Image (cartoon, rainbow, N blue to C red; front, side, top):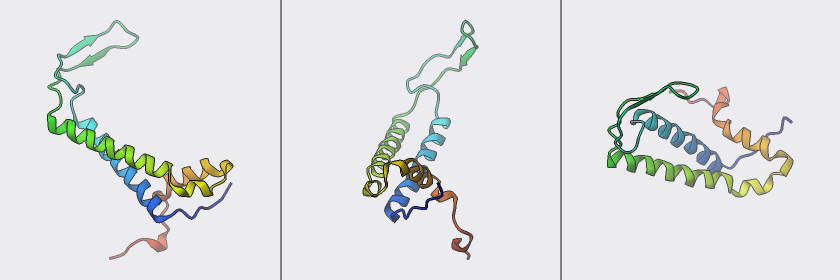
Length: 117
């Protein structure tokens, strides 16, 4: 189906911020040690693949607070986007298509709308 949807600006902004928060959270988690609490390293080759982890110093209180702040904002935005009044206007058979197009709306900026300085 090649339907187009007139997404409200607040829904588009919420979805874009959700993308940004998730990217920021993912980058932070990749940067942090593998364990929240300080733990010794280990090596286990008894499973179907070998697993090794270096010793983890754990996360600092500031790092834990930053992760919690981002996760809280991610939840708020996810609820905002999924419960937005716009979805009551979309017929059930079109919901998945509309949701997919919203998720990728920021990918498709028309060439005529690109900012030039």
